[in-house]
Amino acid sequence: MIMFLLFFLLFNSLIGTSKACAITKKELPIIKYEPHPSKFTKLWKNPKIKLSPPPKLMGKQMGKVQTLGRPPLGYELDGDVKVFTLIAQPVEQYLTTGKPADYQDLIPKENFIKGTGMHKPIIKKIRCWGYNGMSPGPTLEATEGDTVRIILKNELPEPTSIHWHGFEIPNDMDGAAPLTQRPALPGETLTYEFTIYQSGTLMYHSGYNVMKQDDMGMHGMFVVHPRKYENKIDRDISIFLQQFSLPPGNPYPNLVTMEFNWFAFNGLAAPSIPKITVNQGERVRLRFGNVIMASHPIHIHGYIWTLVGTEGGPVKKSAQIKGSTINVPPGTTRDVEFVAWNPGLWRLHCHKLHHIVNAHPDSPMGIMPHGGMYTIVEVIPKNKNAPWKHPSEQNQVIELMKKDNS
Ligand SMILES: [Cu+2]
Image 1 (tube, protein in one colour):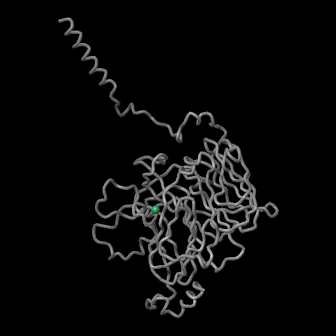
Image 2: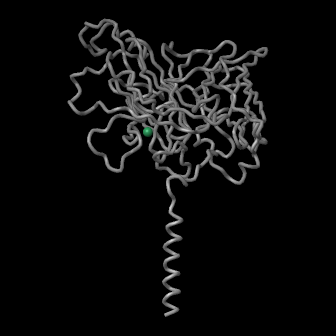
Image 3: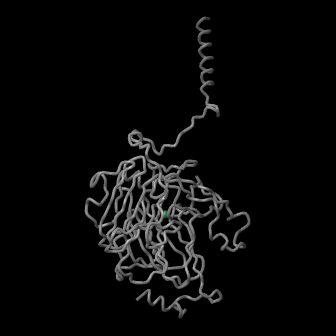
């Protein structure tokens, strides 16, 4: 009997305990943001670090390349040396702003089937790392033969360095820390200086703790113009390809998976990627860069473009390839050019179709709105009322195409 009583009391107290342990709403723990805490974070915590605002345009900017949807970065001149400043820092930005696409009003209303196609755009914030308040960092521009100095200020909670991707420079400038240099500790500054003997669409990205820092968004484009281009470029546009794994409700990228569910051009996902607007007859160069893990076959509608450059520089005329899709594997850049002869609204997107949807649902249901690596090229006609003609029939454009093929 005593044993039974004891058992009864014990059983009751267990139930009682479990009841007491149940977390009520009031007791939910408050989790403070500390980006990817590790045992080292504390060691590197530098209370003196305050995040700098993005540096203002400095000196005379090059202004030739347009980084789609992103502000440009200028430089200062110290004698003949072009001086750039990059501040490595945590960044909070919007992949999608919740606003409709800037080409939404160009789509004829009657094209929408009632009840479909007018999804309310979502807002998606990401907390990542980047340079000068954004990821990808700003596009640097120089000309073959220039000497450049890049000042890197570290405002991250861990050491960092910058690797100059594709550059033929002295070993101690390679930024592959700790192999070729000591990284900058939080609060420290590093200076790189080198002469550029090549041209092409090159890149920069973190050279320390690369898997984490590069995946967190620490990369950008570095365009080196040749002394003279083969053709005059009217629109020179840079697009950095990015992908992130963002679990639902979590703005921090998951770095240990290849299950990416957010895809971006210059840190923006459709419908928040701006359209590219060009005039009929203009020569357009698109520069694509990729330093992360997946490859992206970028496709354009209505045009056959020509591969004119890689991170290795201009492609020889005899080796130039034509197509409507260019694959951009990790660690490479691809420059394509076309003369905008064909007026209208043309899709420009990744042809891995998982990459043109935001936050993949478990199973595709209904009509899925465009997201990810998707925008349009709007080619404004010279004459709105002119009938459509292929360049082979259109005298005005034939001259341009001749130039293109010469
Ligand atoms: Cu893709």
